[in-house]
Image 1: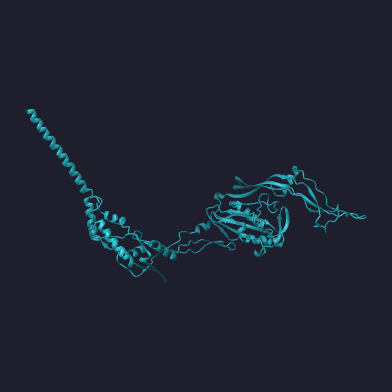
Image 2 (image 1 turned 180 degrees about the vertical axis):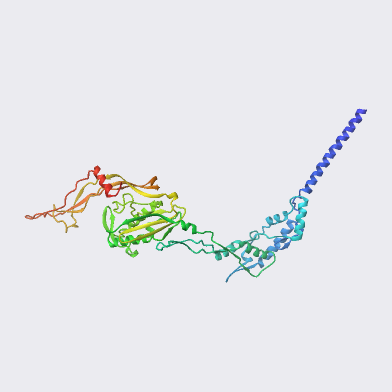
Length: 503
Protein backbone atom coordinates (compact mmCIF):
# COMPACT_ATOMS: atom_id res chain seq x y z
CA UNK A 1 0.00 0.00 0.00
CA UNK A 2 2.79 2.35 0.86
CA UNK A 3 4.56 1.52 -2.41
CA UNK A 4 1.40 2.34 -4.33
CA UNK A 5 1.10 5.73 -2.60
CA UNK A 6 4.71 6.50 -3.39
CA UNK A 7 4.13 5.62 -7.03
CA UNK A 8 1.10 7.94 -7.24
CA UNK A 9 3.09 10.78 -5.65
CA UNK A 10 5.93 10.16 -8.05
CA UNK A 11 3.54 10.21 -11.00
CA UNK A 12 2.00 13.50 -9.86
CA UNK A 13 5.46 15.05 -9.46
CA UNK A 14 6.42 14.06 -13.01
CA UNK A 15 3.21 15.53 -14.40
CA UNK A 16 3.76 18.77 -12.55
CA UNK A 17 7.34 18.89 -13.88
CA UNK A 18 6.20 18.32 -17.46
CA UNK A 19 3.54 21.00 -17.14
CA UNK A 20 6.12 23.42 -15.80
CA UNK A 21 8.50 22.70 -18.71
CA UNK A 22 5.67 23.18 -21.20
CA UNK A 23 4.68 26.45 -19.54
CA UNK A 24 8.23 27.72 -19.65
CA UNK A 25 8.58 26.76 -23.34
CA UNK A 26 5.35 28.53 -24.30
CA UNK A 27 6.37 31.55 -22.27
CA UNK A 28 9.76 31.66 -23.98
CA UNK A 29 8.11 31.40 -27.36
CA UNK A 30 5.73 34.23 -26.58
CA UNK A 31 8.54 36.26 -25.08
CA UNK A 32 10.70 35.81 -28.17
CA UNK A 33 7.77 36.82 -30.33
CA UNK A 34 7.27 39.85 -28.09
CA UNK A 35 10.89 40.75 -27.54
CA UNK A 36 12.58 40.07 -30.85
CA UNK A 37 9.93 41.58 -33.08
CA UNK A 38 6.57 41.06 -34.60
CA UNK A 39 6.20 39.18 -37.85
CA UNK A 40 5.15 41.26 -40.87
CA UNK A 41 1.73 39.94 -41.78
CA UNK A 42 -1.01 41.06 -44.07
CA UNK A 43 -2.60 42.80 -41.07
CA UNK A 44 0.49 44.87 -40.21
CA UNK A 45 -0.21 48.57 -40.61
CA UNK A 46 1.89 51.60 -41.43
CA UNK A 47 3.13 53.77 -38.60
CA UNK A 48 1.33 57.02 -37.89
CA UNK A 49 2.54 60.02 -39.91
CA UNK A 50 3.66 57.87 -42.86
CA UNK A 51 3.18 59.31 -46.34
CA UNK A 52 3.78 57.78 -49.76
CA UNK A 53 3.68 60.13 -52.74
CA UNK A 54 2.00 62.73 -50.52
CA UNK A 55 -0.81 60.40 -49.46
CA UNK A 56 -1.22 59.65 -45.76
CA UNK A 57 -1.19 55.88 -45.26
CA UNK A 58 -1.05 55.95 -41.46
CA UNK A 59 -2.73 52.89 -39.91
CA UNK A 60 -3.45 51.30 -43.31
CA UNK A 61 -2.49 47.81 -44.29
CA UNK A 62 -0.31 47.32 -47.35
CA UNK A 63 -3.31 46.20 -49.41
CA UNK A 64 -5.36 49.23 -48.39
CA UNK A 65 -2.50 51.61 -49.14
CA UNK A 66 -1.91 49.94 -52.50
CA UNK A 67 -5.52 50.46 -53.56
CA UNK A 68 -5.58 54.11 -52.54
CA UNK A 69 -2.26 54.89 -54.23
CA UNK A 70 -3.17 53.11 -57.45
CA UNK A 71 -6.39 55.12 -57.73
CA UNK A 72 -4.65 58.42 -56.99
CA UNK A 73 -1.68 57.88 -59.31
CA UNK A 74 -3.89 56.65 -62.12
CA UNK A 75 -6.14 59.71 -61.81
CA UNK A 76 -3.17 62.08 -61.62
CA UNK A 77 -1.67 60.66 -64.82
CA UNK A 78 -4.24 62.44 -66.98
CA UNK A 79 -3.58 65.75 -65.22
CA UNK A 80 0.20 65.39 -65.34
CA UNK A 81 1.88 68.27 -67.18
CA UNK A 82 5.56 68.80 -66.40
CA UNK A 83 7.56 71.67 -67.90
CA UNK A 84 11.35 71.53 -67.70
CA UNK A 85 13.41 74.62 -68.44
CA UNK A 86 17.08 75.28 -69.13
CA UNK A 87 18.06 78.81 -70.10
CA UNK A 88 15.87 79.67 -73.12
CA UNK A 89 14.73 76.12 -73.87
CA UNK A 90 11.68 74.33 -72.48
CA UNK A 91 10.35 70.78 -72.70
CA UNK A 92 6.91 69.49 -71.69
CA UNK A 93 6.07 65.97 -70.54
CA UNK A 94 2.38 65.10 -70.28
CA UNK A 95 0.63 62.11 -68.78
CA UNK A 96 -0.82 61.21 -72.18
CA UNK A 97 2.72 60.44 -73.40
CA UNK A 98 3.35 57.94 -70.58
CA UNK A 99 2.16 54.44 -69.84
CA UNK A 100 0.86 53.35 -66.43
CA UNK A 101 2.79 50.62 -64.61
CA UNK A 102 1.56 50.79 -61.02
CA UNK A 103 4.22 48.51 -59.54
CA UNK A 104 3.95 49.71 -55.93
CA UNK A 105 4.83 46.48 -54.10
CA UNK A 106 8.60 47.10 -53.70
CA UNK A 107 8.09 50.58 -52.22
CA UNK A 108 5.20 49.50 -49.96
CA UNK A 109 7.21 46.55 -48.64
CA UNK A 110 10.21 48.75 -47.91
CA UNK A 111 8.12 51.38 -46.08
CA UNK A 112 5.95 49.00 -44.07
CA UNK A 113 8.95 46.91 -43.00
CA UNK A 114 10.83 49.98 -41.85
CA UNK A 115 11.12 49.86 -38.05
CA UNK A 116 9.25 46.58 -37.60
CA UNK A 117 12.37 44.49 -37.25
CA UNK A 118 14.15 44.09 -33.93
CA UNK A 119 12.75 43.91 -30.43
CA UNK A 120 9.79 45.70 -28.89
CA UNK A 121 11.99 48.48 -27.60
CA UNK A 122 13.50 49.16 -31.05
CA UNK A 123 10.04 49.14 -32.61
CA UNK A 124 8.73 51.61 -30.04
CA UNK A 125 11.71 53.88 -30.70
CA UNK A 126 11.01 53.92 -34.47
CA UNK A 127 7.28 54.40 -33.90
CA UNK A 128 7.88 57.41 -31.67
CA UNK A 129 10.44 58.92 -34.01
CA UNK A 130 8.26 58.52 -37.11
CA UNK A 131 5.21 59.92 -35.35
CA UNK A 132 7.21 63.01 -34.47
CA UNK A 133 9.18 63.60 -37.69
CA UNK A 134 7.11 61.68 -40.22
CA UNK A 135 8.12 59.05 -42.76
CA UNK A 136 7.92 60.22 -46.37
CA UNK A 137 8.51 58.00 -49.37
CA UNK A 138 8.10 58.26 -53.14
CA UNK A 139 7.51 55.42 -55.58
CA UNK A 140 10.20 55.52 -58.32
CA UNK A 141 9.01 56.95 -61.64
CA UNK A 142 9.70 53.69 -63.46
CA UNK A 143 7.35 51.84 -61.10
CA UNK A 144 4.51 54.31 -61.78
CA UNK A 145 4.75 55.54 -65.37
CA UNK A 146 6.69 53.98 -68.20
CA UNK A 147 8.71 56.23 -70.49
CA UNK A 148 9.38 59.00 -67.94
CA UNK A 149 13.09 58.31 -67.37
CA UNK A 150 13.74 57.86 -71.09
CA UNK A 151 12.21 61.26 -71.86
CA UNK A 152 14.17 62.95 -69.09
CA UNK A 153 17.45 61.39 -70.21
CA UNK A 154 16.77 62.46 -73.81
CA UNK A 155 16.39 66.04 -72.58
CA UNK A 156 19.54 65.82 -70.45
CA UNK A 157 21.57 64.57 -73.43
CA UNK A 158 20.74 67.79 -75.27
CA UNK A 159 22.04 70.15 -72.61
CA UNK A 160 24.87 68.46 -70.74
CA UNK A 161 28.47 69.28 -71.59
CA UNK A 162 31.24 67.03 -70.34
CA UNK A 163 34.46 68.48 -68.96
CA UNK A 164 37.30 68.78 -71.44
CA UNK A 165 40.78 68.01 -70.24
CA UNK A 166 43.46 70.49 -71.10
CA UNK A 167 45.19 68.39 -73.74
CA UNK A 168 48.59 69.17 -75.22
CA UNK A 169 49.25 71.81 -77.84
CA UNK A 170 52.10 70.60 -80.08
CA UNK A 171 53.68 73.25 -82.29
CA UNK A 172 56.75 71.65 -83.91
CA UNK A 173 57.93 75.00 -85.29
CA UNK A 174 57.81 76.89 -81.99
CA UNK A 175 60.69 77.39 -79.57
CA UNK A 176 58.54 75.83 -76.84
CA UNK A 177 56.90 72.98 -78.74
CA UNK A 178 54.68 71.58 -75.97
CA UNK A 179 52.17 73.59 -73.95
CA UNK A 180 48.98 72.75 -72.08
CA UNK A 181 45.71 73.84 -73.62
CA UNK A 182 43.00 75.54 -71.55
CA UNK A 183 40.77 73.06 -69.76
CA UNK A 184 37.00 73.47 -69.98
CA UNK A 185 34.73 72.62 -67.09
CA UNK A 186 31.67 70.51 -67.78
CA UNK A 187 28.06 71.36 -67.03
CA UNK A 188 26.28 68.24 -65.84
CA UNK A 189 22.66 67.90 -64.72
CA UNK A 190 22.25 67.28 -61.00
CA UNK A 191 19.99 64.28 -61.45
CA UNK A 192 19.26 63.82 -57.75
CA UNK A 193 18.10 67.40 -57.36
CA UNK A 194 16.06 67.18 -60.56
CA UNK A 195 14.34 63.98 -59.49
CA UNK A 196 13.65 65.48 -56.06
CA UNK A 197 11.84 68.34 -57.78
CA UNK A 198 10.00 65.98 -60.10
CA UNK A 199 8.86 63.95 -57.10
CA UNK A 200 6.64 66.89 -56.13
CA UNK A 201 4.44 66.05 -59.11
CA UNK A 202 3.69 62.74 -57.45
CA UNK A 203 3.04 64.14 -54.00
CA UNK A 204 0.38 66.65 -54.96
CA UNK A 205 2.78 69.64 -54.91
CA UNK A 206 2.24 70.46 -58.54
CA UNK A 207 4.62 73.11 -59.92
CA UNK A 208 4.14 74.91 -63.20
CA UNK A 209 7.82 74.77 -64.19
CA UNK A 210 11.11 73.24 -63.05
CA UNK A 211 14.47 74.83 -63.76
CA UNK A 212 16.85 71.98 -64.51
CA UNK A 213 19.65 72.11 -61.89
CA UNK A 214 23.30 71.80 -62.96
CA UNK A 215 26.61 71.16 -61.26
CA UNK A 216 30.03 72.14 -62.61
CA UNK A 217 32.47 69.28 -63.18
CA UNK A 218 36.15 70.16 -63.40
CA UNK A 219 38.60 68.24 -65.61
CA UNK A 220 40.61 65.65 -63.71
CA UNK A 221 43.84 65.87 -65.68
CA UNK A 222 46.86 68.06 -65.16
CA UNK A 223 49.47 67.61 -67.86
CA UNK A 224 52.19 69.92 -66.63
CA UNK A 225 54.17 67.06 -65.10
CA UNK A 226 53.85 64.94 -68.26
CA UNK A 227 54.85 67.82 -70.52
CA UNK A 228 57.97 68.43 -68.46
CA UNK A 229 59.11 64.86 -69.18
CA UNK A 230 58.57 64.85 -72.96
CA UNK A 231 61.90 64.21 -74.65
CA UNK A 232 63.38 63.38 -78.05
CA UNK A 233 63.15 59.60 -78.46
CA UNK A 234 64.76 59.41 -81.89
CA UNK A 235 65.88 61.38 -84.93
CA UNK A 236 66.71 60.17 -88.44
CA UNK A 237 67.81 61.94 -91.61
CA UNK A 238 68.37 60.95 -95.24
CA UNK A 239 70.35 62.84 -97.86
CA UNK A 240 68.64 63.95 -101.06
CA UNK A 241 71.04 66.64 -102.17
CA UNK A 242 71.54 65.07 -105.63
CA UNK A 243 67.79 64.74 -106.31
CA UNK A 244 65.91 66.83 -108.85
CA UNK A 245 63.88 69.78 -107.61
CA UNK A 246 60.63 67.92 -108.34
CA UNK A 247 61.75 64.85 -106.37
CA UNK A 248 62.75 67.08 -103.45
CA UNK A 249 59.35 68.75 -103.62
CA UNK A 250 57.58 65.38 -103.35
CA UNK A 251 59.66 64.35 -100.32
CA UNK A 252 58.99 67.65 -98.55
CA UNK A 253 55.27 67.48 -99.33
CA UNK A 254 54.85 63.90 -98.05
CA UNK A 255 56.76 64.54 -94.81
CA UNK A 256 54.89 67.79 -94.18
CA UNK A 257 51.71 65.72 -93.73
CA UNK A 258 53.23 64.27 -90.54
CA UNK A 259 54.71 67.45 -89.11
CA UNK A 260 52.90 68.23 -85.84
CA UNK A 261 51.10 64.87 -85.70
CA UNK A 262 50.08 63.53 -82.27
CA UNK A 263 49.60 59.76 -82.20
CA UNK A 264 47.60 58.55 -79.21
CA UNK A 265 48.27 55.20 -77.44
CA UNK A 266 47.10 52.23 -79.59
CA UNK A 267 46.32 54.55 -82.51
CA UNK A 268 47.24 53.10 -85.92
CA UNK A 269 48.56 55.27 -88.76
CA UNK A 270 48.73 54.54 -92.50
CA UNK A 271 51.33 56.46 -94.50
CA UNK A 272 49.27 56.22 -97.69
CA UNK A 273 46.15 57.47 -95.98
CA UNK A 274 47.93 60.46 -94.46
CA UNK A 275 49.83 61.49 -97.62
CA UNK A 276 46.87 60.97 -99.93
CA UNK A 277 46.78 60.02 -103.59
CA UNK A 278 50.02 60.76 -105.42
CA UNK A 279 48.65 62.90 -108.21
CA UNK A 280 49.13 66.41 -109.54
CA UNK A 281 45.86 67.56 -107.95
CA UNK A 282 47.39 66.88 -104.53
CA UNK A 283 50.59 68.74 -105.40
CA UNK A 284 52.86 65.82 -106.34
CA UNK A 285 55.25 66.15 -109.29
CA UNK A 286 56.84 63.79 -111.78
CA UNK A 287 60.17 62.24 -110.75
CA UNK A 288 61.99 58.90 -110.94
CA UNK A 289 60.39 55.84 -109.33
CA UNK A 290 61.37 52.16 -109.28
CA UNK A 291 59.08 49.85 -111.26
CA UNK A 292 60.03 46.25 -111.93
CA UNK A 293 63.67 46.85 -111.16
CA UNK A 294 63.88 49.90 -113.43
CA UNK A 295 63.92 53.64 -112.80
CA UNK A 296 61.08 55.29 -114.70
CA UNK A 297 59.25 58.59 -114.50
CA UNK A 298 56.17 58.65 -112.29
CA UNK A 299 54.07 61.17 -110.36
CA UNK A 300 55.15 61.18 -106.72
CA UNK A 301 58.69 59.98 -107.27
CA UNK A 302 60.69 60.33 -104.05
CA UNK A 303 57.82 59.65 -101.67
CA UNK A 304 59.50 56.35 -100.75
CA UNK A 305 62.42 58.33 -99.33
CA UNK A 306 59.94 60.19 -97.14
CA UNK A 307 58.41 56.90 -95.91
CA UNK A 308 61.87 55.44 -95.35
CA UNK A 309 63.00 58.43 -93.29
CA UNK A 310 59.85 58.19 -91.16
CA UNK A 311 60.24 54.41 -90.80
CA UNK A 312 63.78 54.64 -89.46
CA UNK A 313 62.82 57.32 -86.95
CA UNK A 314 59.93 55.15 -85.76
CA UNK A 315 61.94 51.98 -85.23
CA UNK A 316 64.65 53.93 -83.41
CA UNK A 317 61.87 55.22 -81.16
CA UNK A 318 60.80 51.59 -80.56
CA UNK A 319 57.36 52.17 -82.11
CA UNK A 320 55.53 49.10 -83.39
CA UNK A 321 55.56 48.65 -87.18
CA UNK A 322 52.49 46.91 -88.55
CA UNK A 323 53.46 46.85 -92.24
CA UNK A 324 56.61 47.64 -94.20
CA UNK A 325 57.91 46.59 -97.64
CA UNK A 326 61.31 46.72 -99.34
CA UNK A 327 62.08 47.91 -102.87
CA UNK A 328 63.03 45.61 -105.72
CA UNK A 329 66.33 47.51 -105.79
CA UNK A 330 68.18 48.67 -102.67
CA UNK A 331 67.65 52.33 -101.78
CA UNK A 332 70.90 54.31 -101.91
CA UNK A 333 70.01 56.51 -98.93
CA UNK A 334 69.77 53.78 -96.23
CA UNK A 335 71.50 50.47 -95.45
CA UNK A 336 69.98 47.20 -96.69
CA UNK A 337 66.75 46.10 -94.90
CA UNK A 338 65.96 49.61 -93.74
CA UNK A 339 64.05 50.99 -96.71
CA UNK A 340 60.26 51.37 -96.69
CA UNK A 341 58.69 51.23 -100.14
CA UNK A 342 55.16 52.62 -100.50
CA UNK A 343 52.81 52.45 -103.45
CA UNK A 344 49.12 53.21 -103.65
CA UNK A 345 46.95 50.11 -103.52
CA UNK A 346 49.46 47.42 -102.60
CA UNK A 347 52.34 48.69 -100.42
CA UNK A 348 52.00 50.84 -97.30
CA UNK A 349 53.88 51.80 -94.17
CA UNK A 350 51.66 51.29 -91.14
CA UNK A 351 52.55 51.74 -87.49
CA UNK A 352 50.90 51.78 -84.07
CA UNK A 353 51.75 53.74 -80.96
CA UNK A 354 52.48 50.90 -78.54
CA UNK A 355 53.39 53.26 -75.68
CA UNK A 356 51.15 54.23 -72.78
CA UNK A 357 51.36 57.92 -73.71
CA UNK A 358 51.18 59.90 -76.98
CA UNK A 359 54.06 60.33 -79.40
CA UNK A 360 54.71 63.56 -81.29
CA UNK A 361 56.17 63.70 -84.82
CA UNK A 362 58.22 66.59 -86.15
CA UNK A 363 59.49 66.69 -89.75
CA UNK A 364 61.64 69.25 -91.53
CA UNK A 365 63.62 69.47 -94.75
CA UNK A 366 66.28 71.75 -96.16
CA UNK A 367 67.89 71.48 -99.60
CA UNK A 368 70.20 68.68 -98.47
CA UNK A 369 68.52 66.53 -95.81
CA UNK A 370 65.07 65.23 -94.87
CA UNK A 371 64.63 64.69 -91.11
CA UNK A 372 62.04 63.09 -88.82
CA UNK A 373 62.07 63.45 -85.03
CA UNK A 374 59.90 61.45 -82.62
CA UNK A 375 59.10 62.90 -79.17
CA UNK A 376 57.40 61.25 -76.21
CA UNK A 377 58.02 59.71 -72.82
CA UNK A 378 61.74 59.02 -72.31
CA UNK A 379 63.16 55.51 -72.56
CA UNK A 380 63.47 53.70 -69.25
CA UNK A 381 66.77 53.88 -67.39
CA UNK A 382 68.71 55.67 -70.11
CA UNK A 383 68.12 53.00 -72.76
CA UNK A 384 68.32 54.00 -76.44
CA UNK A 385 67.74 52.17 -79.71
CA UNK A 386 70.09 51.81 -82.67
CA UNK A 387 69.67 49.98 -85.99
CA UNK A 388 72.05 47.46 -87.50
CA UNK A 389 72.12 45.82 -90.97
CA UNK A 390 73.63 42.44 -91.71
CA UNK A 391 74.58 41.14 -95.15
CA UNK A 392 73.64 37.46 -95.33
CA UNK A 393 74.97 36.91 -98.86
CA UNK A 394 75.39 38.45 -102.28
CA UNK A 395 73.00 37.11 -104.92
CA UNK A 396 74.95 37.03 -108.23
CA UNK A 397 73.52 38.59 -111.33
CA UNK A 398 73.23 36.66 -114.60
CA UNK A 399 75.19 39.07 -116.76
CA UNK A 400 73.74 40.79 -119.82
CA UNK A 401 70.68 39.92 -121.88
CA UNK A 402 70.78 41.04 -125.52
CA UNK A 403 67.47 42.03 -127.07
CA UNK A 404 66.78 42.95 -130.70
CA UNK A 405 65.02 46.26 -131.35
CA UNK A 406 62.29 44.88 -133.62
CA UNK A 407 59.85 47.65 -132.62
CA UNK A 408 62.30 50.41 -133.40
CA UNK A 409 62.08 51.87 -129.89
CA UNK A 410 65.83 52.63 -129.90
CA UNK A 411 66.42 53.35 -133.60
CA UNK A 412 67.96 56.67 -132.65
CA UNK A 413 70.60 54.65 -130.80
CA UNK A 414 71.06 51.50 -132.89
CA UNK A 415 70.02 50.48 -136.43
CA UNK A 416 72.10 47.55 -137.60
CA UNK A 417 72.90 44.06 -136.45
CA UNK A 418 76.11 44.10 -134.45
CA UNK A 419 75.40 47.65 -133.32
CA UNK A 420 74.73 47.75 -129.55
CA UNK A 421 73.30 50.14 -126.98
CA UNK A 422 73.42 49.47 -123.26
CA UNK A 423 70.01 50.03 -121.74
CA UNK A 424 70.86 48.76 -118.26
CA UNK A 425 73.83 47.42 -116.35
CA UNK A 426 73.46 44.15 -114.43
CA UNK A 427 73.14 44.50 -110.67
CA UNK A 428 73.93 42.00 -108.01
CA UNK A 429 71.25 41.20 -105.43
CA UNK A 430 71.41 40.81 -101.68
CA UNK A 431 69.94 38.84 -98.86
CA UNK A 432 70.05 40.92 -95.70
CA UNK A 433 68.69 41.26 -92.20
CA UNK A 434 67.81 44.27 -90.10
CA UNK A 435 68.16 44.50 -86.31
CA UNK A 436 67.42 46.98 -83.58
CA UNK A 437 69.85 47.03 -80.67
CA UNK A 438 68.92 48.30 -77.22
CA UNK A 439 71.85 50.29 -75.85
CA UNK A 440 72.62 51.24 -72.25
CA UNK A 441 75.81 52.94 -71.14
CA UNK A 442 77.36 52.24 -74.54
CA UNK A 443 76.70 48.49 -74.38
CA UNK A 444 74.17 46.36 -76.28
CA UNK A 445 71.87 44.83 -73.66
CA UNK A 446 69.52 43.09 -76.13
CA UNK A 447 68.85 42.79 -79.86
CA UNK A 448 65.84 42.01 -82.01
CA UNK A 449 65.68 40.96 -85.65
CA UNK A 450 63.00 43.03 -87.42
CA UNK A 451 63.67 42.38 -91.12
CA UNK A 452 64.86 39.61 -93.45
CA UNK A 453 64.81 40.73 -97.08
CA UNK A 454 65.94 39.70 -100.53
CA UNK A 455 66.78 42.27 -103.17
CA UNK A 456 66.83 40.12 -106.29
CA UNK A 457 69.66 40.51 -108.79
CA UNK A 458 68.97 42.24 -112.10
CA UNK A 459 70.42 41.21 -115.45
CA UNK A 460 71.85 43.86 -117.72
CA UNK A 461 70.09 44.72 -120.97
CA UNK A 462 71.86 45.41 -124.29
CA UNK A 463 69.81 46.48 -127.30
CA UNK A 464 70.92 45.39 -130.79
CA UNK A 465 69.71 46.85 -134.06
CA UNK A 466 67.77 44.79 -136.64
CA UNK A 467 68.85 46.09 -140.08
CA UNK A 468 71.51 44.41 -142.24
CA UNK A 469 74.45 46.49 -143.37
CA UNK A 470 74.43 47.32 -147.06
CA UNK A 471 77.40 46.40 -149.19
CA UNK A 472 80.29 48.72 -148.59
CA UNK A 473 79.05 49.95 -145.19
CA UNK A 474 81.11 49.55 -142.02
CA UNK A 475 79.82 49.53 -138.41
CA UNK A 476 81.10 52.40 -136.30
CA UNK A 477 83.22 51.56 -133.29
CA UNK A 478 81.12 50.46 -130.30
CA UNK A 479 82.09 50.87 -126.64
CA UNK A 480 79.44 48.49 -125.30
CA UNK A 481 81.04 45.43 -123.75
CA UNK A 482 79.16 42.27 -122.83
CA UNK A 483 79.20 41.43 -119.10
CA UNK A 484 79.22 37.76 -118.12
CA UNK A 485 77.30 36.21 -115.22
CA UNK A 486 78.74 37.21 -111.86
CA UNK A 487 80.88 34.98 -109.67
CA UNK A 488 80.68 35.80 -105.98
CA UNK A 489 83.98 35.97 -104.07
CA UNK A 490 85.05 37.25 -100.69
CA UNK A 491 85.99 40.52 -102.34
CA UNK A 492 82.46 40.73 -103.76
CA UNK A 493 80.96 40.54 -100.29
CA UNK A 494 83.56 42.94 -98.91
CA UNK A 495 82.73 45.49 -101.62
CA UNK A 496 79.01 45.05 -100.95
CA UNK A 497 79.45 45.76 -97.26
CA UNK A 498 81.46 48.86 -98.05
CA UNK A 499 78.91 50.08 -100.63
CA UNK A 500 75.96 49.66 -98.25
CA UNK A 501 77.83 50.76 -95.12
CA UNK A 502 77.41 47.43 -93.36
CA UNK A 503 79.93 46.29 -90.76
